[in-house]
Length: 174
Image (cartoon, rainbow, N blue to C red; front, side, top):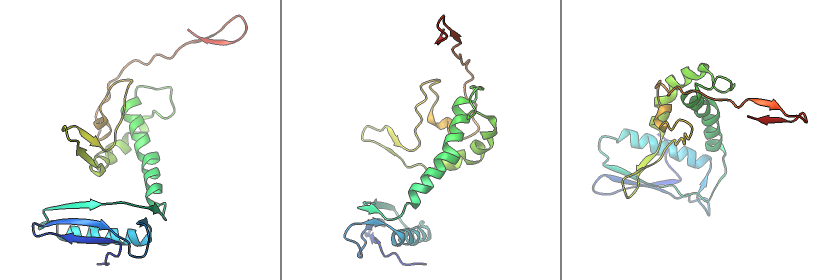
């Protein structure tokens, strides 16, 4: 197991671990290759002790990032998974749009539950769930959870405005 050089492990008597981002080689905590290596080491350590730990507190505070790996990974997940899955989940009845294709069904069925498990969700002080993947579906008012499995979206009729040409050759919507 690789040793963590930028994430300090502090465990109290109750079995709660606090992970403190503290890079001794930087004036500000920086997301860089050393951080990624440290993160791997800490995850391995947490996995190996999961049965005896009571909880984990983290303090991920960054001054800046020297790596764009997480940003690139996020972009990849959004463009290759979230967008197509959302199109299938919320727009399967919109047949005129190239992005709304049943070909996205396998992505939704294969990765929907995995994406749901990757979310960071928490309850705010009044008990309302926050965070995670949030969808604001104003058209059919379906919940965000529709993305996470093979659920059936509500089929509703989509009305496309008919265009006509007025007396001056300009298009107008009826």
